[in-house]
Image (cartoon, helix red, strand yellow):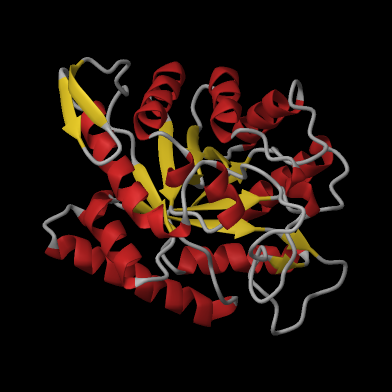
Length: 311
């Protein structure tokens, strides 16, 4: 199983210097990919908690630098690592502009782009771009349709309720087909969308240990079974698990969430993701309050990579 690293975008990051340092350090350490996340704004009184039932929004996400700008910087600073979003929120973007930006980064990087995309959940973010929670699935499907159209041959003709392209060239094109990975999977409709349209899945491990690995493997097997029923080549589909790490000074108890605990417990969770059949795992250290500097974060990232390499 490969490891990827989420780049620093959070509050306190020196965007001028830290992004390049993080990208180069991760590539040198043997990380296979670099990832960004999307957080459009930070509401003072959010409509929904960060997680149920009443988890507050992490203060570190008061700033979340633009994910595509961050990946552009990483593309220039690296040579081999893949560059992914986990995830972009479809309803926050105009589809053709998003397709064009992703294709441009793919060209800059020499074909290393991965488009991770999802429906989103924050009412505050959605209403800032004129969308509603009811629009989320429809806008995601429309965005995927636009990707298919504008990344294909010119001239492009496409029509949907929001997008009209009439016999036009849309350039640049990606170097090759950009893999489109979908987050979510909590509803039957989301599972069907992943199986029918996605090149991969971006899930979370919901329970630590063998039980969590078995549950995630069963869900992934079901998605690939459905994809096969749609006539798709499932050997080309990837599962990339997202690990949002929070370290504790002492071992977390048996009811802990995955990727919460000591470094040894985090390594156990990485092993569980591998046991579930993950092709890759994203190590995300952006939520860790006590990383006072990007360099400290990178030292921990390198240690995780080294321990994973010998386990």
